[in-house]
Amino acid sequence: MPNGQVKLSLDLEIKEPEGVYFNKITDIASDSQNNIYILDRKEKGLYKFSEEGKFQKKIGRYGRGPGEFERPISVFIDDKDNIYILDSQNRRVEVFKNNGNFTKSIKLNRYPNGGTNSIAVDENRNFYIAGFYSDENVVLCKYSPTGEFLKALPLPIIDYNGIEIRKFNKIHVNRNLAGGSLCFDKKNRIYFSYKWPYKICIIENEEIILSDISGTSNLNWTPFIFNTSPDGMLFGESTSSQKIFWLNNEYIINSIKSVDWEGNTKVKVPTFHTQEKKGLEKYFKFNGKHTVLDIFNKDGQFIASGEINETIVFLNSDNKNRVLGLKDDGENIPVIVRYKVEIIKANVNF
Image 1 (tube, rainbow, N blue to C red):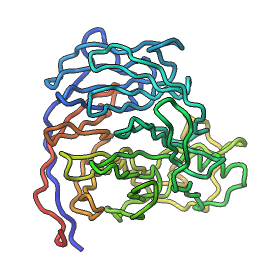
Image 2 (cartoon, rainbow, N blue to C red; image 1 turned 90 degrees about the vertical axis):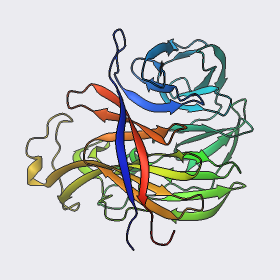
Image 3 (spheres, rainbow, N blue to C red; image 1 turned 60 degrees about the vertical axis):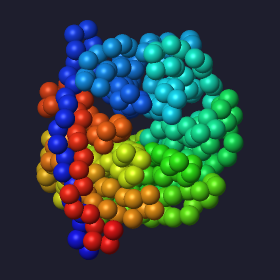
């Protein structure tokens, strides 16, 4: 089946303005006015920029008090421009107005014990937190507006069986790979994308109505492992879904970071220091990274795919058909980028 084609055109770059430091950016969001919000885990705050890329303010600061963070990792902005920031260290959600004014702290009475954590909020202000819930064997749970655990949704943890590992190490492997992201449509259906492997599910009334949606099929989803240690596996790289989000309320985008490598997963690799990879070329050939955007319609039908041959993590979109991402400039200084998206050739079955 021929794939559709997507044209991506760079529209904006945001580099560190004077007095602002991009350190460890974990998420990006946009409000109804197309302002851009950049969440930085290490700088313990949310940076707000105008649609034109002009810095406006920093929201939040380090700490455990109201409106403060220790490990902010995910941001969600609802239809009223309320800002929800998930703090994994404090295990709570901090809520702000889009002018930066603090509203409230919501303590979560249960929290995932690993994996990629992300937050989304439905029209009834219930919270959905993705992550590694080992006790429930799921990757997504629902919470009330006051933070009470309501239920685990039917999205099981997918075990990785690519190499022979001991049971204890397997827990660490699955914790590293588990999690994902989600978005809602106007009917409050959930579109959930696993971090790994490629799997998108549609959930309606808390039941799966469509599962195993996938687009790009020629990517290597086997984790690129360069380090083993007594307390578990340490992963060098892995092809993984970064975020699922809407494009102009018409299409679903699944953002993928692809790691191109060759090797034999059955080969036992000696222990390397985390930062020391000498001798790795004996076991794996690393060919590079690229970014893939797969686009689907509301029913989960694959429409088109676009690719950029550089390291960009796309994390959200705005109201003008533009996607927002994080680019590695090669000097470990993050750059925020915005691309226009144009579907120039749709899938033949669309």
